[in-house]
Length: 394
Image 1: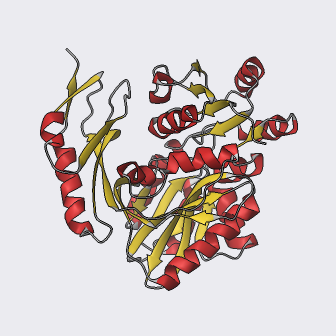
Image 2: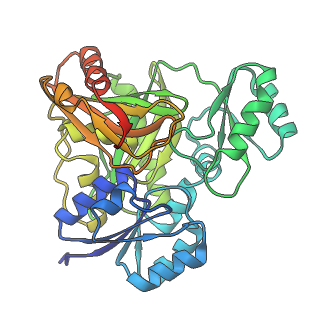
């Protein structure tokens, strides 16, 4: 018998963490939100919170000892994930598992696992710890090529090297723009792809691996700008994506929801990245596109609760609400009344305590029937997002 409630410690409490906390609380769980800054979005709804640097292993050990959680749910990359093995040995459930958290928080580990051990198709790639190594790899790859920190999220530190003269600036951005304390970067072949997808994949404790309808997305500066579900793709490509996702998640072990990213070119499928948690592009599920949101699926899988099926309910689109300039201030928002006058519209303001350039402050959502015109829905979601004006609190 599955006994609830559980005490969950969430490591990282941004907008994805906030929705995860709400979903967990609906199952009666007690949640401690942890982040490196006060008043993070998840802290605003959690039962308790802690502010620490999760790269400080001793500080991490101290709050785990203090709160004695049943489950630890990592939501960001900048964590001393090597400590998770000891927590797991002490009887704490680490989501999806200590192995998964350690491998996926570092692009090097997950890419090598996929490409070398599991023989999954990926872009060609190499690692650099110096500018000279970066120059050599970039010339071997050819231009353009993509450079990223080994640990980062939301596109931080990622850029495209378009010509040899770009290498130095791109190296500097990547080697200083990551999370954690590694200056090592990954340089990837630029794949000429038709589109990108996220395949939300659910590993269960007592059931088969499940796959959500594919989510299409568009990125700028390495960060998602809009996502839509479903994304049209061939049956052959979808089957390949599911097979790869199942192979990689089985190798990493554990229960929970994963965001598996791919480049799709015709029927060819290239594995790109994998996150062992709800994915930013998956916020489109908040528009009711499928049976359960990605956050509800994550919590059900973590808690060992049944997921009978995941089916498409309707089409939906999410579009980001960004702060576009360098000004930093405590934000307030106007235009909600205009945005919500639009049929089939919703807005989620994340509650981030301060702005910074290109920071995602919220999302706009819209939806329609299963066979709706996705292009028209994307335009509508942008229209809703454009209604929202971010300005300083008075």
